[in-house]
Length: 88
Image (cartoon, rainbow, N blue to C red; front, side, top):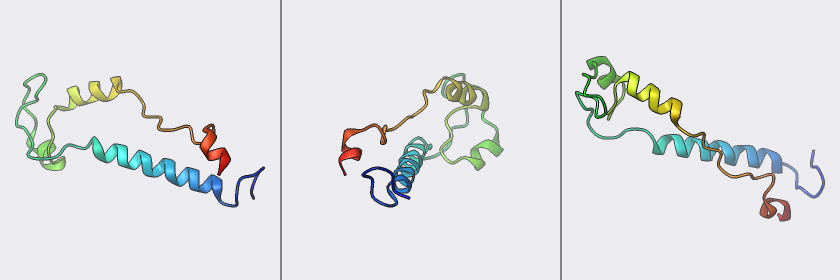
């Protein structure tokens, strides 16, 4: 059901685009390369199981949890409020 001047399926297209943006952002933050044996922040030993589970891991569990907690939430674009999306 279209609302206002929006074409049929416009809302679903916005949802799909937002999900694709979130996936792209998450993939760009994934570690790559060879895993470190010691955390690059606190020098703690990174367990073998963690190094095998996550390719390219650079932080121990505690430092990674702290970084994740302090990380800003990626909001992307306000597609509904943007003038461009309303003109299409």
